[in-house]
Each structure stands twice: as C-alpha cells, then as structure tokens.
Length: 501
Image (cartoon, rainbow, N blue to C red; front, top):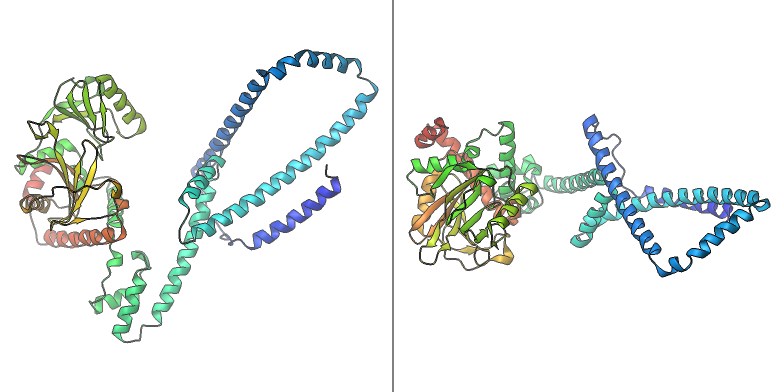
C-alpha cells in the first residue's frame, strides 16, 4: 500500500503532466456565447438523464451480482459461519474496538484521498481523449467504427453538448485556416494572365463551399465566362434553403400545398391525368374497412412509410420494409409501431386503388420518380419492390447512372419513354415551383399519378457530382421561373385549384 507521502508525490507529478497536456490543447474562445436559461436547463437535463442512466445500469449490475452470490453454493455453505462470526464479534468488543475504529477512520480518510486522485486522473484522461478525437477527425479517413463507439460513449456520459461545442469550434477553426490559406494563395495571382488565373482558380474552387468563395474569384468568373462556378451549386443546399423559406413563410409555399395527397389529386384531375381512386374521408386505424385490393396510406406521410398493399386479409405487403404480413392483427400492430416511432405523424389514413402492373399476374406496378425542375426532368428513379426492393437511376437521355444512393441495391431497370418524360415535364412546367419530385406508377396500360414529393428522403446521400449538377438544375429553374413570373405567365390551372382549397 502507498504511503501518504507517495500519494502527495504522485499528485504533484500528475499536476505537472496536466499543465503539459493543457499547453498542447487548442485554446478555447475567450468568451462563449451567452446561453438562454432554457438552453442551460436543456443541457443540464441531458447531463442528468445520462447520469441517471449510468446509475440505473450500475444498480442493475450490482443487484445481479448480489443475487448471483447469494444463490451460490459457497454462500449457502458458509451461512452458519457468518452467524458464528457475528456472535464472536459481539463477545470480543472492548479494548480493541477503539484502536480498530481509529485505524478504520484513517483508512477512510486515505481512501477519500485516493478517490480524489482518481477523479483528477479521469479528468486528465478525458482531456487527452478529446485531443485524440480532434486529431482523428483531421486525418484523411476517420475510423467509422471507432467514431460510432466514441459518440455513443459521449451520449452515455452526458457530455453531448460540450462535445458538440468542442467539435464545432475545432471544425470552424480548421476550416477558417484552410480557407484563409486558399484565399491568400489566390490573391497572389490577381495580376497574372487570365489563362494562369483560370487554372489556379479552377483548382481553388474545389476547396471552397459556396459561401466561402472569395469575391475576386466570383468577379473573375463573371468577367471571363470560361470559369464555371459549379462549386456554388448544390442540390442539398438548395433544398435546405427552401426548407428555411418554408419556415419563414410558416409553411405557406406552393410545394407544401402539393404535399397533401388529397389536394394533389384534385390538381391532377384538373390536368386530366389518371390517378388512383380514393375512398371516403380519412380513417383512423380502427375504422379502416377490411377490404381486398386496396392501398392504405397515411394522410401525411413520406418515403413509403406506413404504406400497405392489401391483396386480401391474410396477405398484406409492408411497402417500406418489404415484408409480408399474414393477418389484419399483424397489420394493426405494425401501424401502431409506425405511430409510436414517429414514422407516421398522426392516426389518419386514406384508402386508395391498388394499382397493379397487369391484372392477370396481380403484381404491383413499378414506381417511377421524376426529379423535376420547373419543366425539366433531370433524373429518374425506377423502383421495383417485389420480391425485394431494387433501384435503377436514369438520365432523361436513357442512360443508367450511379448517384451514390442505393449502390448495393441496383438492378437493370426497364427505363422510361420519351413520351412519358414529356408528359411529366409538361405537368411540372405548369407549377410555379423550382423543384418537385413527381411520382408515377407504371402499368401495362400506361402511367398512373402517385404523388408530389417536395422533400425527397435522404437527398443528402447523393454523391458530390450528382449533387452539383442537380444544384445547377435547381438554380437554373429558379432563374427561369422568376423570369416567367415577371413576364406574367398565368399558371391558370394551378391558381384555380389553389383558390378552391
């Protein structure tokens, strides 16, 4: 056992190590942004929830170990001995009691010192771990498995907010340093020949996000049209900006009105486009009639969540999870899970016609999802869902391409015709919206309208190349739409439909 002097000596050495460690850390900001009382309470709540979870886990573990010990053979064998030891303890209390008590108190005090040292060492270890995290984030390739475990541990320890703040601060610092270096390098070429500037600026643009591109490069690009500012184009950024517009307008944007399936059906009726019939008003889960050859959909849903194809009462297909349910009870249980998990927002469902590829085989129709940019189709996703879900990406020119999404589940689809693309582009051009995905079902008798999708799921998973050229489509659509609105394009069918809502 260590002496008290040895403990003090170790404390001094540990303090020196901590000073050395802290000198290697990135300095924090002098002043942190002031928190509101509500934000501070939320952070404390996160910490307390994590601490409570750790306590519950520790308690459960101790209870399990205690139960295991008491049920062991050894515990049962020595049960009489424990009773005798208790009896002798009472008999021999006396002269030694005082000295034992004093020794015990000294050990307790020593134990408290050791606990303080341990806490001190844990704090130092935490600081070093944070430093390691920062260094790993700056390597060429992050270990995804380690990052998953590390962030999971951060959550369990209740350090989420401070961890996020440190990551954000470090990222901003590193990003700013890189941006500054790139900008300064570019400035050295401002007086060089245009051909030289062209080469340098093209390479610099690869390192900037659109909000970071310096003004002198933008000015050069607008003067010399051979320098394309494609780095400023991003489908992800455009959809995120559009989401912010919806927030600022309290959701009163044209695409939001189309996100309601029943309202969307009224609009395509006005355009004379075939769609599935729908039955009655919205139902609660318990009100849905047990009928054959119907599709059950949430009134407000996305990404096939909560969509079920009912062949008959004992054969029901969960579209999102591509699983077969064999009873109505199993369907209701799955729908309850949809609601509980938040996959479906509310217990309001619609019943519509089950569109099949052909009547003889009774196989579900193929999904065709057209990414439309105000009268132009940029991308088409073909989906077959049975016997397993598979995807195929198409350009309007009929080329199969890779986009970074669904790479493990691609198949050789059948594609679309030029006439089908023209039908979709004509519909898109009559909507005063820069982007909307228009979904159809393809049958042997032609296409049947499915829904409008203003917010495609997981749009952030497109690779960089796809994201940029679709970003170009979005910016181009915004410009053409603005020009048409200025020139007084009427959008008659759309406005008549909107006036009736």
